[in-house]
Length: 131
Image (cartoon, rainbow, N blue to C red; front, side):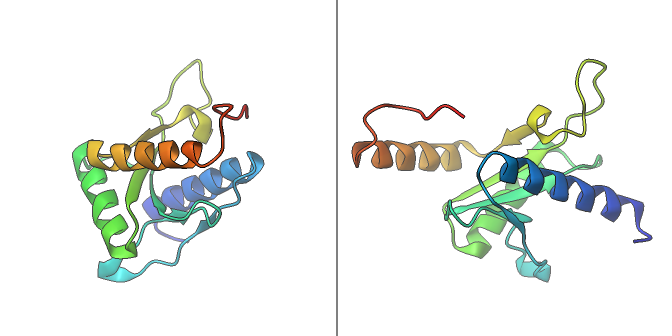
């Protein structure tokens, strides 16, 4: 891969997929779909969410979130989130997705919370599962 930016992005996507898998959430990178991109990562056991992975400079957080919203619309799912790499920190391993950030629009966050509440009402009366 000769494009350094593409290489960084691909590496981050692979790291996020591996991070999710180690936590019992097998994920996969999605095939790029040109102008109708549907996000970078999906978690098949959690339908309705697409993840846009970002490991770059040059765009604003607002642009990334707008991209995630558009990609969720393209994929016809209710939630799009941006999982972005944390810039270098002396205390943290910046390449660990667990130290990164996940950002989404307020509207998509409410959709996620509404679905969590619905699922809890369907039978999980013990609250959050410990990971």
